[in-house]
Image (cartoon, rainbow, N blue to C red; front, side):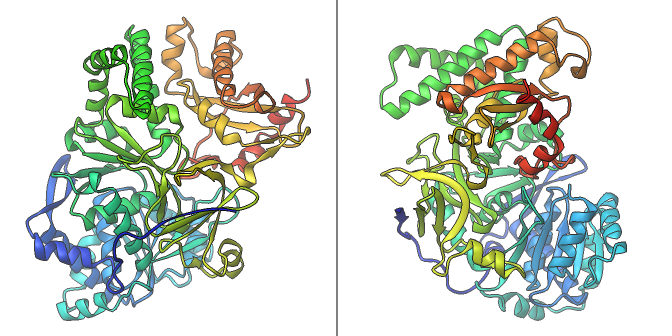
Length: 598
């Protein structure tokens, strides 16, 4: 059994809680700008002193409403300033936040409200309130005493409710919270079964942030450091960046609508961003499609290959003169425009949630935006491992962060131990015992390997390994990641468990398709062109390219292009854009069976 540990490099506080950062910021740097928030379409600064005052006022309102220490308060909203404000107010009041994805169905809302025993919920607007009401009418949320709406001035309402609560009473409540107390109950979006509530303590966050912000000082400690949050704050990945930014006084902005993201990036100009791999794929594919539409497709392709070649040469320690010259040329012609699309000041990006793929990793580093890929789960308060600017192996998820150990079990499953590993699943002892060993090792369910330097590589999900009729074990992630990198392909799922060969279901990217159709002289809707020979040839070329990453026995031999689109709303993807394989397999079983009939 292979094992690797990274020693702890800093001292983790044994007292206090996450609210201390807000108080410290206001005391040490009251005029420091810690947020920029959008008000009537314009960005307005919020100082550390202002943020403390707003958080305190809302926390007093929660106390006046009867929220007691340890109570759970649900929060369902898009990514916006009020989300962060309410999160900290809940902590100031000694309670625990229960994030709910704003895309969650009424049935999912019902389960989370009931299982968590939430005493109150803050919903964003009418649509979210309707789902909460529907859940309550179905008998869910019996412990729920209060429902507030952000769009109906929840912040002001709570501020007025708490006017009779003294500063001393609030401070007593705030400081009574210890590292052992529950900070949040995050329900795993889950690719199978009902979501389970992951219990994360203030101590879990304090450990994670203490070492992560120290390791990633290039991001958090630079002059004028800033980040724009656009991923759902209900996801632990965005949440940990939020808390880390406040801890390090990094200016934070929020972008609630992905349609406005490019405009927000242009104005906000973050020095670093975080995203899931699908976002990086979309940015690359969109740039490629625009270049092709403008008649500059070949130039973009050459520029992309040069960026990748330049980055790979960096790892080798020597960049050939010819590559350096081409890289400098394309930096003026292409790369600069791509960096401008990210705001012009972005030097680093953090990627998590799924494997990025080494090709995209090299591409972004080659254009001047280093993507630091990491790995973690909700159960581990986000990062277990991360690549660092000075210690990076593209294609891996980095080494364990300080104070963290990794172990590879005999069946290839990765196990981790560290102070960021959760306390267990809420009201679910059986699941907790299944995931956590008595000595604190967490079973991730992911299969991977660890090299001699401690760099971890994820090769697949333990439960998603396909075994063909010939007995060949196949990890679908390798092929799927490569296929999704193609501009025409939106999603794909590799199949073949118990079958004579590997095959794939493919969906077409509806944003990229019109440009492809125009370039190939096609007209009409995608649904009318699914059998087009050139479309099939393009997808077949992508499949052949993906097959280069695996052995012949693991290669995709057949594929089918589906008419349908896989979406989060349709139940095919989780909020972090992971594929729900069981749902897809159930709904498209006939398409899978057809692949093996002829």
